[in-house]
Image (cartoon, rainbow over all chains, first blue to last red; front, side, top):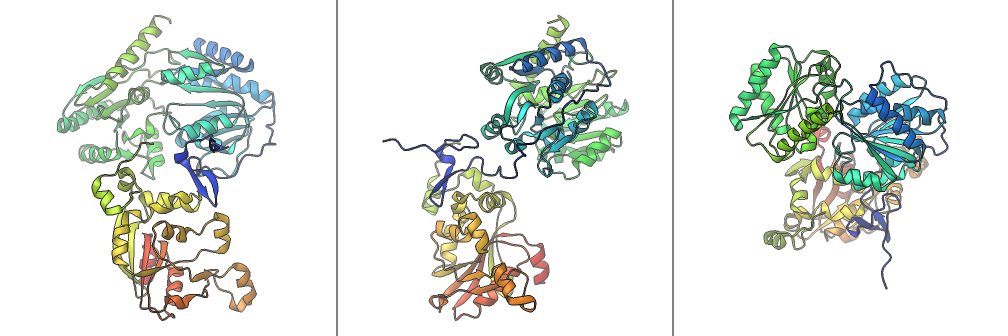
Length: 386
Length: 201
């Protein structure tokens, strides 16, 4: 006779290696740390909220935006595969407005807390009469609002809640590959969802198709310009420091702000120690640096001219005339998806659509090669009007 | 989750290794013996790394399955160093024990197969109120339970998970020192130290 398999009612876990026994009762160890207050299931947004956009969408954006809204309102889910700088967030505004006008619950989720903090004011500007509430780790006293902007971690607080849930950067850490976060995402839905990514893989695209989903693609940036094509600069370990310094000097001469991406905090500390001997006006930011938000703000205001940074700035950041150097670009941690996101920081602003992306490393890895080829292919497709 | 096959040396040293090499690497072991309130205390780690993460999941997440993880890297050391000693866990409040569904320090000792006797108890808030305003203390008042006679002549090790101010630990030591035991030492998983170092002088 088979034993009854315990299935976690919250995250669906059945793996016995993640099931413990406490006082003779099974409990799930996978979702155990997702504990806390849940949102009020009786909450209703105020309805009749309108979108106010102070800038026009491009023709392609309008087309995708309209099509997304049609699909959602007819009960489909949507995957928006749009290149970096395409204006993915704006693509869902019309859909959000349609749901909000009906008094339905709308949420915008993303894996990273920094992105939630940056996104909230943008959404407030687009929907000025809406009460926009941000929910993330240290900021979760208030869980209800007309529009919720939250990390994917906080989705556990919402059970069968959202009529429309948009999840941005589905391929970013920590959401990527996390079954518990995926389970909480599904559990939080009452209606339709939109997934956004510039770097989906085949698995992501197949999954949406199986779930009444449609994939819409946008391969051009808002301003119509090309994606910047990275250049591989080969250099062995010690010369790579000097090569990085050489390019930084070149960018500083033209007064361009620079991000220098590093794969690990350790490498970042070494590189910044070297660079600060030669150049003033820089800083090192990582998840471990408690003043990172201050330094990032200083950089955006022009008080710092360069930042050595780990992956925390690989997504969601827009800086005019930014130039990017990826140091140790051949490191194992740099997947093609990560390098495409990093390259996507450059040339995002109207009137500043060009910039350089340099990959410094000893070896041209498959990830580097795939990145360059993918970006090149995307640009050619866009220029051919596909 | 990958299957873990411990190397022969660990099979020999640990009898039944629980932690894989990756988990072990994440433990910030810092084995140090320090003196506190006139008593030698062995600390196993700083308040960081996997120990800290596991303790949070264990106590706040109620993940009782983690109980063997805390002492397993040190069992050979502890069994040798505290040979023929009896461990006395620092008490938690009854309310917390009921909320958790288990007594967290007892579970750690039980998982490690180390002999222990719970002879200390915290006075509950209701008991405090019965003392009246003049007798009321700061909620960490402690008392000895019946059964301390079995500790007579024994070597005692007072056991706690984290030492921060050390106030509770100090009170427990004071109570144990009233017993006719052979010796008293301490064992603490993690040193969260600035406060108690400062108070200790």
